[in-house]
Image (cartoon, rainbow, N blue to C red):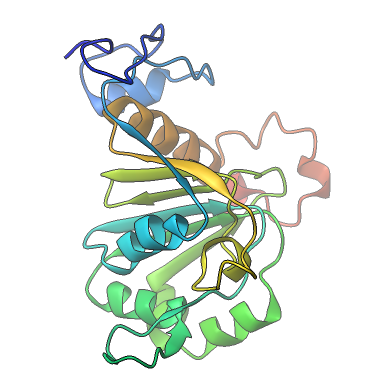
Length: 217
């Protein structure tokens, strides 16, 4: 389908070449001009929780997260139906996902908050390697990729104020897009993988100040 075949579609020059996703990822060179072939949904406020966090909680294959700040995030406990809402750490949910074989990757810039570390440390499924965390001080992305099928790109860090189950009067003002567009998924995953694997470390001018360069892991 052409990018201008439907309402709201935009035609943008494509720089990705090759017939397969790995070939496109290998040739991706930071130019983010893409031919968009799928719908983009703009989300704001509580929609971050409904569209992004709920997708993460129901992931069946993988969850990749990139965030500048990494903090504890509380979610509604879906095991407790009824009018009175109960909450638990999203890490509890992700530990259950890990036990089912879901790949969990988190790429972050700042050290995790103490509540995050405390919640993480009490979950054996995560401590044993069920969730991989890697730190790069240059990461300022706010990305969530679920099952290599849905991607969020926006302003919200992985924090309670950004994505958690907070009321509108406590939540940050956040905005972003959610899409299943193949070109965007390829580009986002390629960029994530490039940093995650340490492919950017050799030429990074902050390498000498980095506690653990990713290419040394």
